[in-house]
Image 1 (cartoon, one colour):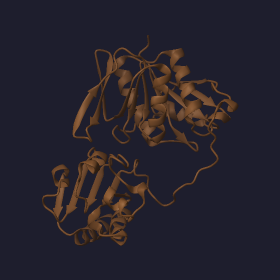
Image 2 (cartoon, helix red, strand yellow; image 1 turned 120 degrees about the horizontal axis):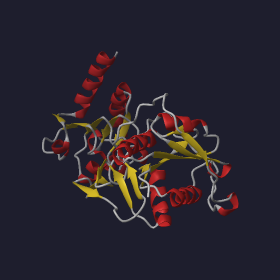
Image 3 (cartoon, rainbow, N blue to C red; image 1 turned 180 degrees about the vertical axis):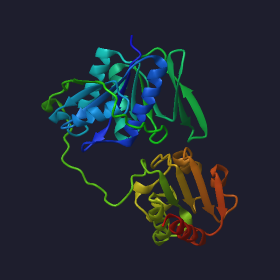
Length: 327
């Protein structure tokens, strides 16, 4: 049995997602501790150029499947190929980012391999040759340490921005191995007919700075001051469920247990009371700033910095100060 670690690299339109590079970096650290190799699994069409990027980011070997049936993500052909490669090479661990696609793919592969899957992991370590994963439970109120000692591979999805992205090293060398897809086109039930892209918004999952508004913004027009601060900081606009349910802002902006789970470097919560469901989606943020008129709002117990005051006075003042500082 090998101590190799597989990493599925999610790519879209020829670009590997930042969260996948983070998973690859985590695998590199684990492999060095276990004495194994890092094997990147790269699927798509016209993506052969990404193989060298994977090696530069820490992969020792790349399994490259370049085929029309893999041009767009579909869980059936991707799961079948990952399962076959795992059967053939018996890795100790299979890592992937906990994106929407990763959350769909991981359990599908786990079923095929009759193994376990640990989701939304925020820390990894090696104990007695087995990878131990830490993940939030009970809406983030507790941390659980998990392992799957009797099944291979351990399938683990890593929370985006919970792990550092490795710096590419142009001097690294590795092996690229071409592999063939498992399913032919007529064996795949799902078909991708096209994509609709939301323009002009920063992806919440990948954003390093998020400014969120809640019930305290008072209405859709109240998000204008939130957007202005986010624009100055180069960040994304988030929202609580209360603001989304009220129809003040689209669901795509919702942070929380029923929305996006985020881990930015800076999270500014404006007019958000901080219900446990919202905390579940943002409590792993590196720095949390809360702005609320209610000094007893639950968000202040989680925040690193708190401002008790009217967000319509505080947020514009912050925007003005940041404009002056950032030019």
